[in-house]
Length: 250
Image (cartoon, rainbow, N blue to C red):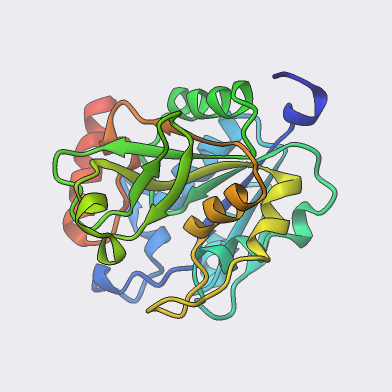
């Protein structure tokens, strides 16, 4: 499925989190990996992929982030209160109003993704004619990650947080990486329909799959070959692991 509508690409990078487990006052996405802020790698990835617009959603230490990334041509949106990932994405609505194409949603604390991997996600998303596609990974021990629930045809029905999963769902080894690609026209209308009726009182982007299914839209998934690429940096130990992986690529 290749028409003009599906050719454009914009990127939303979620970078509002404080990162309390880093045991540092510095915004999480500014912690360095091999001498550069982890956010730098995510922005560079978007640029390599030909993203026409790149919107960084900031929260904690927004001014520091802007200063650190001043050499890039970025658009900023601000999430005043941390009300969840769907709420964070919604902050980019104004910046992408009228954009004709697909929106890649990346996380500012996931610096190890390779361009070839995201190109695979985009190809899968577009060739499948999906309104939204989630990047997933298969883990022997899925632990606390959200489980990806599919039907027999392989369509994604929903993503269930580990703490909300029943025994059958908890046995699923395919997990959500938090990386998505969605049609712009669908994305922002869908996130407006997500509610916060959950234990955390937050607006979860994972609920966008429920919205898509209710509207009989096609939902896709793309399984990443090397799950370590989608590793999120949450602790100083994670940072060391990421540095090791980055150095091994040099």
